[in-house]
Length: 393
Image (cartoon, rainbow, N blue to C red; front, side, top):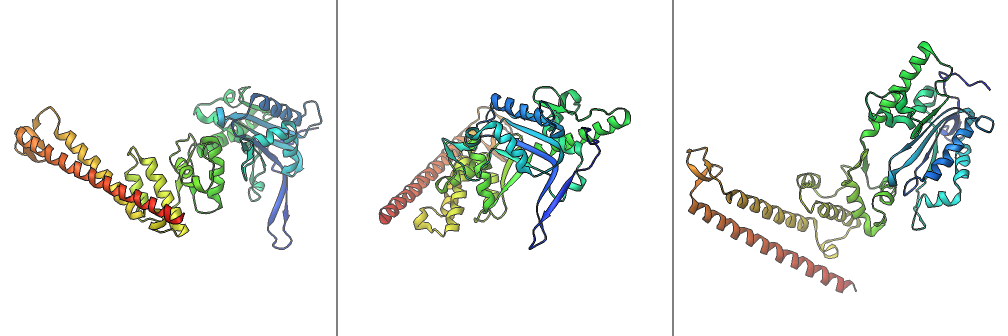
């Protein structure tokens, strides 16, 4: 069977809804498979998937696909497999996914989207897809086949041996039977697509809204990055805080501008990002937003937005006071910029040793007073919480 030319456009057909006339689904000859199980793909699973990939391309059975690319990305719990195929004829995605699900088996499919034997809602370890309907007329084979091999572009000066290295990235019949200008143009299109896909993946920002996407993002995140904190109403603030503070290689999460219900909360979190208790501050801010949405008041919550802000202000003042004391307590002398007096100074104020000691004592007294006020404030807040619990019981 002759392979269709590499420059041949996508074969596709749209199926419209009778009632609306909108695209309901489509079938095409551009298919892709992603196997991303929780805990990472195993060596045995990679072998099974690669064997099926080679079968699709005519190894030990009639050819199902003309061309294909296969890659292994990530490490440890994030290791997964990408497959891209140019099929001989049009098909729905379920046809391709059925073949690859069969080689893995029901147990691997279930374990791939479960934690401790419990299936995660709306989580699928295997995804089979086609180009979007509006992109099918314009999608080139080289572009579709480039996505699995995109990590080759980590090296700006990559060569063909980087995107077909025989281990983590493998290609089959992509540039066969091409030479001269035709081969050069095809490789240029392929390598341009590699760079584009890699650049797009370097930093992908996902925004957290109060809608279905929040549940979907959290269910994708926690099994990999914090499996000991399952996504449920009691843990929502903790999981979302982990997402917000996540330092991923390719992915970061941001809260949508409408997420928080407190005024200036985004600005305050940005300014306090260097604090040691920043994680707790983020959890409190998220939980307070959920409480506001649920209509809970101070008596039910035990701490309002104003209370949280007051405590944060106390902590900030105490920290600033400590930094000022440390600066005054330095053991070296430098010239005052105002009068050139070789002595202790604070900004434009010259201080003799005696004056410096008095200033430190005064600051320490103020610092102690702030800590006492904070302690009383927290104790009062805790007593209110306990009182409210007894009343509810």
